[in-house]
Length: 281
Image 1 (cartoon, rainbow, N blue to C red):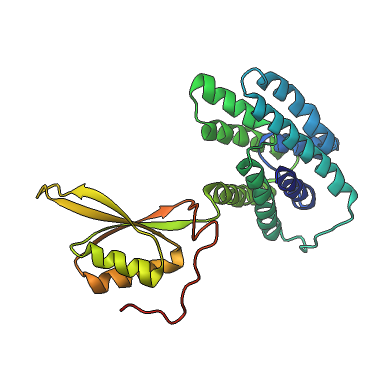
Image 2: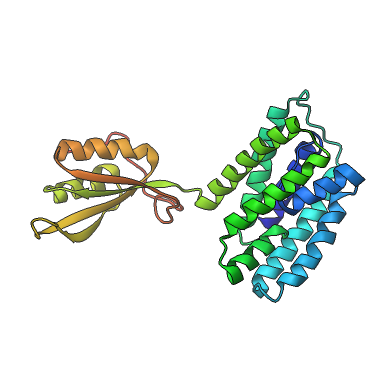
């Protein structure tokens, strides 16, 4: 998966960014500057720049992190070279908006896969981790400032118009990375407080065929024991749950929140098939 992610990211850099003069942040942005100014092949500059950083980071990062970083960097460099040899041309009719969107989606999905499976493509990730470990600076903050610095220097080979579309690319890129890291199996978590909790449990389990956890709580005012129901459903099932609870107890208190990732029956592996004509009794 790290190799697939590196291939997608490299494809975006070669076929979208370089082909349309869009910059990038981090070490990849530095390689694009070297390409734009000195015509230096990014497949080689990626390795040349990253190797000293990896050696420097070896004493600060774990063995597993270094191995995955070496692998991710090597795969990125290999695919940067491969995509330059493959005669694929994406004709966007010089539309920088489409180029930025395409680069953001492809590159973001690729980088997201690399990060999700424990790898990195080296570069500023190493610097950011070192700053976080020894200076207490959050990784996101360090990466942001390094990206800003690299994008600023990218103005030596691109104009303001291309930089504006690069910022669009960076936004789409970051959203795709966050989406993949947040989890594919997003869901909705629901907490319910009701005087008819058992009826709700029975209907949710029989009609919706979802599991329910009963948490034991206490009313802050009455100090009486009061059960709280915890249910996780897919976004498409949320309205059905709201209607079901509303029919049983119109005074029920419900709290709904986002669940970034749900792992288990009904989300990441098989759940019983819903009965097409099953209704509440």
